[in-house]
Image (cartoon, rainbow, N blue to C red; front, side, top):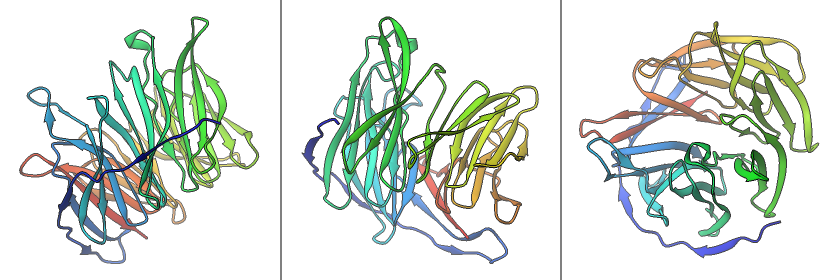
Length: 336
């Protein structure tokens, strides 16, 4: 178990923004939707839970078209206010923002590809900031990997941590209980592109044509899913695993944990995808439409013909566009 360093959080900025709620016909997957103007030229990694929306963003321009993500912002759906939770302590960037009903988590990093980094968790109840983990890599720049975070609704945080033990490049999958401060090593993974994803019950990751399903309650891998092509970025809820197969026949696929049947959700290249409680969402190409598939209804709907990077937690869907001032707007849709 690692000792946490406790910080008292200073609230930096509060901005008032407007949200426009739009009731839609019940025949659509979408019950209502609203927009949040981030006031940021660059904003990324949005997540939503229990009446709060979080993201990493910034307006610090480092070139003609690149703005650093140097702050973490929290938007209250009730008060319509944006609070600045954190500013980079490395003169670097903030990233990997995640939220559940109790915690906001993110990384603060600097150096090429995240050679120096810290993982933080902010308690929404106690209004305090905790340092979860940190690292300073002596790896070559092309070997560095920023820890990619995934946070469950029951307070487990997971990430891959790269090291060079005995001159052998290794990626260790970490599982951290934020409430108890207990950290465990789950697996060693060779693939540099492997990313973990977690739900209340399961943790998943992939290597080549194998997807590993780890049970949080049983504390072991309970299933290995063998795929026909390279399996990329598997994601999980409490019943299903989805993944992107990359090869001659690119596919977005789904499988119920404990069953054999695999289902093709989408045929073709997928730019980005995610899974919520009942919905799988994806964008087929960088400028393509955003789709939602209802698992219970076995039905697909086009959510929008414009937008980027659909994220979903529970049944709350988020995607982004640019406003007239070129600042990022998040669109939030409640799916039923």
